Image 1 (cartoon, rainbow over the protein chains, first blue to last red):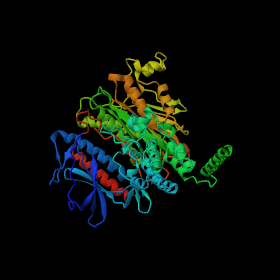
Image 2 (tube, each protein chain N blue to C red; image 1 turned 30 degrees about the vertical axis):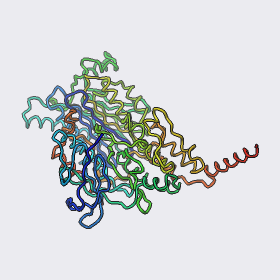
Image 3 (cartoon, each protein chain N blue to C red; image 1 turned 180 degrees about the vertical axis):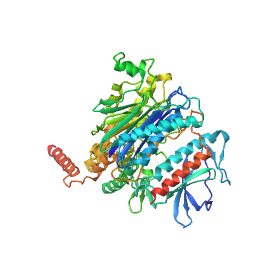
Image 4 (tube, chains in turn orange, cyan; image 1 turned 120 degrees about the vertical axis):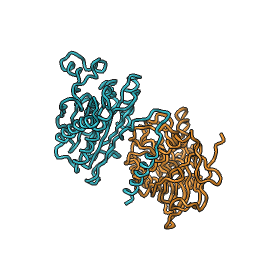
Length: 315
Length: 306
């Protein structure tokens, strides 16, 4: 399916008080620019520009929107407002901070603090998984502080994945991209295409969306930790529901990480939402639990060694 | 206070949604209200809107952060909603005053107080059983009390929509007050319009509530009510709250008001005329609505950036 692709705003374009520096990312729903404000501080600006509905052509600034698409274009704007509303209420060091929101060029813009660092996705790709346990625990414990704040505001992120976890240069994580965020308390269920990422989305993302809850974000957190170990996401949840080929982290990484971390991953990745940790707090408690020096990982190593010796002796 | 709360209103197959739902809370007090504007009467949704708005606004004014007297608050705010509806009709010289039911509940110091007019109901569900419920101001309820109709037959009774007491009626409405009731950990208070309790038995409601948290249970109950009522269905609305002990660990991410600024008030209410638009022109945003959304977001950014 050849989809038309949108041209970004040109470099140096003056968007209200911001000067566009370059495009950071372009998706089907929006574009993100690096820009500088009038104090020359860098910011990230997200532009609502669904490529299936609005087209910005060579040399134009205003996107052209076909008459018959106008209603849908504006309806989609509601989702963009949801993201703005969600973020505006959140002020937390581990959640991306929104600085401004405005209307221009017949569309709307969300201005966010620009963070220096790399996404967890890039970290994973660089190391091909096999991240250090201490790094994982540190990053996710802090990230869960942010997610707790999100849930405390009655919001769900609904698209947690390594690409949406930004690691600053001081190794503190920031949860970004609230494009899928949904207010759990609004009566209207959005009928616009729900967004999810295979492998990281929970079973209830696909069907029975009425079951979405904190446990759905927790599934995605589990899948993200899994990706830190494996270098890739676990089998997609919709396929797992049909035929579950997920090999438990406890089996797959036995001996390479503490049993407790592996068990936590498997716990988060339960298909039955009721069997997962029900709140971020419950999950954090486990991640924060001090690793007993005589803890499971060492014991299992010794047990493995003993098993090998016994086998050898029997030869 | 620690609790979890959920509200939802569905239009169902009707042409408009005449139900209104709202809740507000401060650090020390919580208020929930539901109103069902009367279909047979003109401007039923206006009456319902005025009512929830009056109760919510009175709460915002008086809960500082506590109400001096919850029963007096309920009585006064519901009575003034009635007068406001009558005034609305007089100013516009309406031939018929719009009418509505109302049930409202206040929780303060771990005690629940409620009041109702008409046939919207409040249930207090404890351990999967109904601990208390309001008695409808309907003809059929009189028959039930007289032992001439069984409780389970109410939903199917031809007179079930005939109520003898509502806001906007000729003469002052009778506001029924509950007893002051101490809440226990995991008690659920559920306010519902007849579009919900009509098609469902109280047993179904209790069973669903015991199965999971209200955030999950209420949408399922509304699905069931809609499915059972079919094309003759009504607007269906619920606001429900589950109470938790302050230090309960099984409610870790529920709303806790302990750290709230005593002057802060949180309110959640459907906006007037915001009933779900029919598909096709689904949620077309006007320029005004866009400007308003942007203002709202900018205000929130400003408020939370300090």
